[in-house]
Length: 345
Image 1 (cartoon, rainbow, N blue to C red):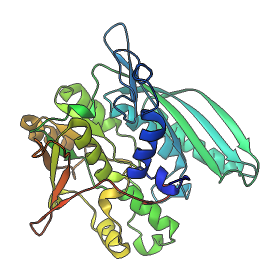
Image 2 (image 1 turned 135 degrees about the horizontal axis):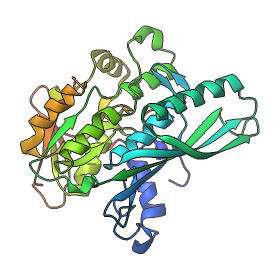
Image 3 (image 1 turned 45 degrees about the horizontal axis):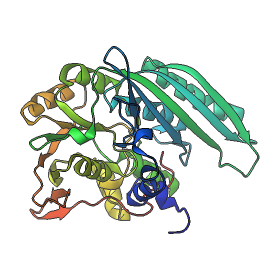
Image 4 (image 1 turned 90 degrees about the vertical axis):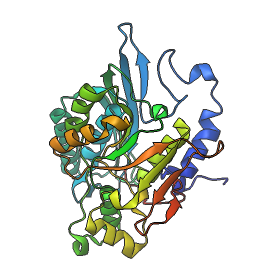
């Protein structure tokens, strides 16, 4: 492709290829991380800088542009705060602070901006995260679609959770129903919400889940992610590639709400590629998996399931995700391709 398309921002194969060609291959190795830390040498939604006392400063940066900006279950404010907090958590960090940049279009209503900011501030406050700085810009009418929020999150980790550390024998845990955010956004964009009133975004910060698990099972959690753009499919394919393993999952064990599954079937959407904004996917030590799942349930995530396991690759050149279907067959789950749902996060 010679020009950027919406597919390049969808979180799937096109975006990964673009980043690989324009950034990852261009930077020399010494620029990809701070010595002793983690950077784009192993790309993740956050990075880490080592400190003199053996801990890590975890940092993340992201931009949020969703359509519509108010959607069933949330708005762009809670989306930005939750995404920032969750990206710090998934690298093993305890979130402590954030900065933001808010850019709005000329003519944007101040009361609407107030609601969005209050939503973001309340979410950070509930997580104990301090908003320590930021920036505000206004673009001329027609040069921006309503509002864009960019954030930086900062946390501290005793030990990092790095996806490349996934190993054969590990189990895959999903903390709740998948595809809720992507389905609700798609329905809202198509004006279908009244017919599918149960569709609501799952957007929320995961501090109540991840901090207890990090503190209790830090050594047993080998990978963690919130499956946003590209969904569960992209998350697991990234894990398989970065850890050089084979991942086997079972379709019947993947938690999907019936209304979401029905909506996806009607419109020909694959729920495995749709975003979740309040779900954690964990790769955990096999012997600890049942115990960890019990704790996940006790923390209020009662729909959590062990959906599969990690195995040695059968062929040297292939790192695959394979799903055992509900009718007993097998199919390869490939990274999503093309424009999945535009402007979801």
